[in-house]
Length: 268
Length: 246
Ligand SMILES: Nc1ncnc2c1ncn2[C@@H]1O[C@H](COP(=O)(O)OP(=O)(O)OP(=O)(O)O)[C@@H](O)[C@H]1O
Ligand SMILES: [Mg+2]
Image 1: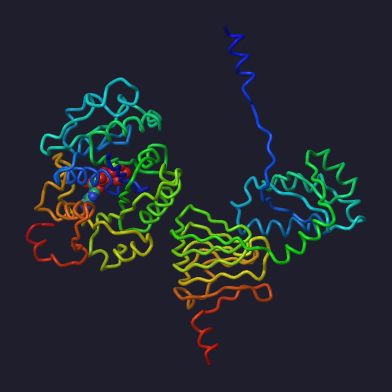
Image 2: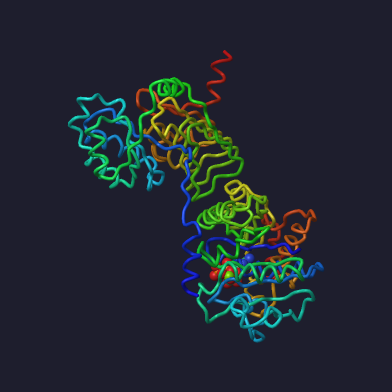
């Protein structure tokens, strides 16, 4: 039986898709059969970041509508074994997703996969609700600023009340905080909330802190999930986060401004 | 074929009629001065605007004397309540004339409880059995918790944009960063206790205080909040303990 993980945030542009790509790749690298689904119907970003946009034939909506079967739509990753991507449609609108349709696809995927990662769209509309509805775990992606933290809080409230687990009284969704685009220098100047501030407001477990890093943009431009670049701080931070998710204990890095000297040399 | 289909559709039960016990809020009318009644009610609504959306309510005239009932404009009461998104569902304890008019404007009539039962109910009402509510999880932005008929006990934090209401007291063992309204049905004895005060709004029995008007020195400390002479008093819990041990 697969575990379903939703990557969600409320606020847009905080790093959900970056995280979904990195996390799914990390889970697969650790030997788990992993599928990652783009729920952002109409925008379609995940395939770009995963570097498989030229291999999209069928998409999530085609499968829901019965126009293609799951195996036709799933794209096997070329670099990492055990990893498959179910892309979103660019031509449909958001209403193309139905709860029954999503449930059918997830149930079928669950037979063959260990983890299903759902990349949620921003907001609290239908697409976001459906991405979260069947989840066992939630990775709440938050930037260290007030509006992002507020939206994450809102999403946490929704996860606790409007999901299948909540409705069936089937235990809570496991909530994980992933703080991204973190810059210790800016925290020090008082321009950003600190890790402790955010933890204090949201009171959930901290899965990881991903530093603000140029390597993320480079990675998405070249279609290689940043976790595959272990030279980069963001890549190693994602690798740590996946390991923690899988039960390993690792100290948090990139919370303090230690790497000044190296940063100066390597540019980030 | 279609006839058959129709037949089976018709014979399948289309409704069930059931008797259910449920709690219903009662508006006990104590004076015939409707304008005054709505002035006070509006102040109450302002403390919890969302709570009263489509709020079913029972009108109780038991405590309004016969002669005051005679000239009472119940049609006016009805539409003014509906204007404020209340839904008057029934009426009790009114004389025949009032009951007749009420039925005319579409309010149901609920038979008054027999004398003996009513007495018992009244003595119970002076010693209500509290139904407290224990919340272990944080109350998040956009969520509303209402402890009806008792205390709300929150073991975690109340986020900005979240709201906790209680007919009784509110205890918050984490931080209060959202809204807390105790004694929402008029209990002036209700109190708010919180471990770390940084609220958007606090209120007791409709007397409220916004974040801006809270004494800065109280922010971030453990406090209790109560009413004295119609104004909210915020008092440090630490200081109290020192006093009593003295
Ligand atoms: N750690 C990081 N350092 C620097 N830039 C980042 C980091 N994480 C994400 N970004 C950048 O932020 C932008 C938004 O990222 P992404 O598309 O992953 O966000 P999203 O939450 O999926 O957005 P949307 O809500 O639109 O779906 C991208 O340009 C990405 O490169
Ligand atoms: Mg995205």
